[in-house]
Length: 306
Image (tube, rainbow, N blue to C red; front, side, top):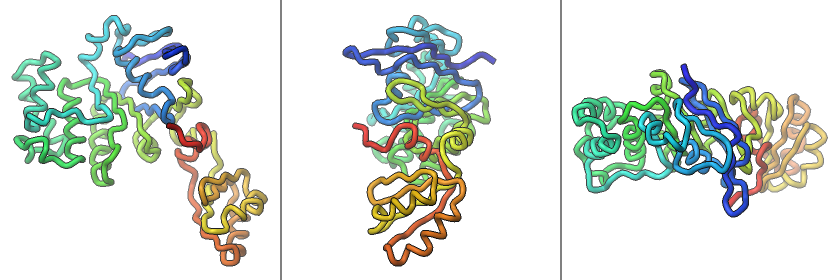
């Protein structure tokens, strides 16, 4: 099976500043590939380059066997896109939104109408087929946007923060739908700020910052390679003052707000010290396994990005 998307040495500059800087990216067919990075890391520009919406200043984009941007229209006919913001037409019903979107691809009316029942079932919107968009909840609109991206039966689906703003129930429904797509052999490229989402869904994750790739591997391999096995979070009024003591019992300790994040492969000495000090120092704490968010923060920093 051919490579769905390959970016080689990609460079894109604005006002003399490299937004994407020599980026390489290669997607494996039938897998979910995560593209993670803080705000301003170059994710959105990378997606626009990968879709042929803008041309690179240097490097090569190959999408579904086609060189971009020259053959962008041909390649995009086999791609689905779920944008950050829903762009559903408020003048149409749920069914009409699917039908009109299918016409943008030049698909025959009979093909579109045959696809609609399955897409409504996929999104759990069978009972809302003739409902106006204004009557839908946020979760329903997001599921419809995902279903709409599948109208052309795409091989590759771009998902740009697909669950932002959704409650936990709606997020889990979206995740179930994405897993079904993977089971059908679809390839997914996912951007998200939810590290648990990336950890659950992605086979491979590429972390980028300042337009460059800084890490790439499976979620578990990234965790094993970049952070200690256990994290003890210490919080309370005396947490920051207790940092020097915490540093004696862990391999790495970071303060964020009023919380200490203590990273260690052997948490027992730290937990024993905390048990003695907790009452007198006004401390509370919890122990947990390291996760992808710990990796992300170590690689990209804890400073807020605008």
